[in-house]
Length: 323
Ligand code: ACO
Image 1 (cartoon, helix red, strand yellow):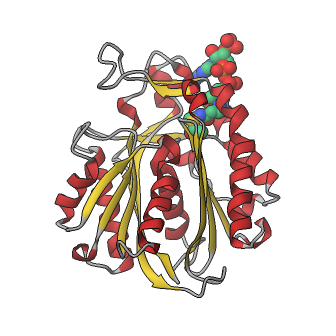
Image 2 (cartoon, helix red, strand yellow):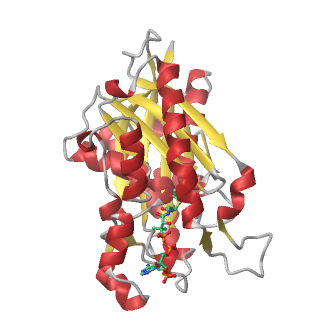
Image 3 (cartoon, protein in one colour):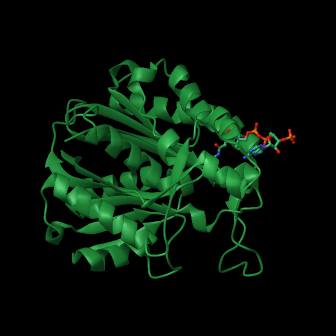
């Protein structure tokens, strides 16, 4: 059977690093409050020339280089973002032009779960035989939708981009295969109003800032994430004990710890970058994957479980044996 093998990983972080102490000069907060509630120590903010398309392109170039694949081979670009440069064209086609590849590209909107959604869509297209080589990118510039009057949210987010290359390969259908073994997606629109952006093309009178009821998001996060992870494991015939690494969406340490505990995974199996990057929404999983891959913790052949939850609410998980 055809498997979507993950053969390259790349990332881009903006040049400007902003510590919690620097945030405290701008809003009424402290390093201690931010660290204790979230685990965040710093984040990166994009400069005007570091657009969503620019960061996505840099991450994609790095993923192609890691896989040793030429951009001309790419059939499709799926870019998950809630902060595109323009309503249209899709940021993905800007990336396509910058890389000089053919095929097609489109953006996908599922907030912090966007990377899992894009990975799952790309996997379906590859297994259907529609495409063979796909760039899956998560890229965000949340600094441009933050409400600096709301200290409860503006301290939580950062900017950046991460990308993976998926290539069609052969497998025997067992969980020893390399590639995406299973994924599960969910949304619950009835919960849309606990985490949203209040302005867009259809609401030109609103500022376009992120609005969140943090306690409500937290209340839903742990149970829903643990459940989707179990579904993905069951679909692959595996258990949490088989996982080499959990690469969770990096929203805050308390959610990450609680999901890890529910799955019975030790902290030594969980990749954490929220302290370094803060919450970069759709970019957070590929950024975390890249960090642990680059420093040698995550190796090819290992089993990696990814999970995310975000505005929508949307949530989902994917299990991948790295190629
Ligand atoms: N600095 C200092 N004090 C602050 C700050 C800040 N940055 N923000 C809020 N406070 C104060 C509030 O004013 C309040 O003070 P009061 O008691 O005097 O009124 C107090 O801290 C508690 O405020 P809450 O908003 O109730 O803070 P809470 O304890 O809920 O923590 C947090 C907020 C960290 C966001 C928490 O709700 C949480 O972890 N939520 C999970 C959701 C999440 O992480 N979302 C990220 C995006 S969604 C996602 O990616 C899954």
